[in-house]
Length: 293
Image (cartoon, rainbow, N blue to C red; front, side):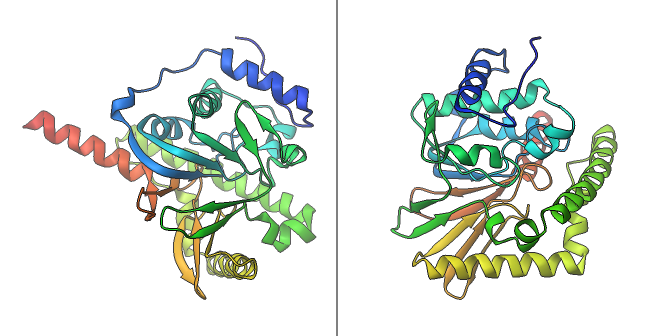
């Protein structure tokens, strides 16, 4: 297998070289088009390719079962912070890149909004690579006429902005928790139990984490309201959510490390958060029932 060189201190040539590599590298075949569930728009973020915590196989399964006219990649797709420390790039991570780029080639409108972990791509905002538009933020108009501001969300994280060293310390602690999360998941798989996230459960139970998430959501919604839009879509905090805050629709598409979620827009403008681990579990249950019938 050839050695993959990922653009951490990226140049336009590095991005083009990586694009060529992803297109030519052997990959897992996609599922048949007829098996796909179709949406008007899909938002995904916080995949963190290049880390062991990334649930790449679950994301591949998601991409093989859904399609859309437009897809937003709402930041932290590649984890440059971790790749600077230790290179980790299994074949499944390349399969994710290949699938995303194939969507752009076959006509899906792809908008990539880099986050803080893949900030090396922010210097290319306004450019297109392989049919993928790189932007700092975007305005999405839903089928029912609402205007949504789309951004990663780290712009409103005071810790990331004001104390970058503290953000990296927090990132290290988070990675320890994610290691524990992988061990728990491995044990559950061994005993045939469905996916469950220890880190997601811990965040939901820790009072300070809950308060931070709530405050983050309020700040993002307030900022969106000041820009004259009807709502906002973001990622960053790894917590999928749909709620109204002071008349502003707040949507967070979650992540593919802990929750394995995506935000989708139906063709009538209705929004929904999809929890893909639940979808896989339901599919497995239906298979067992069908075999028993």
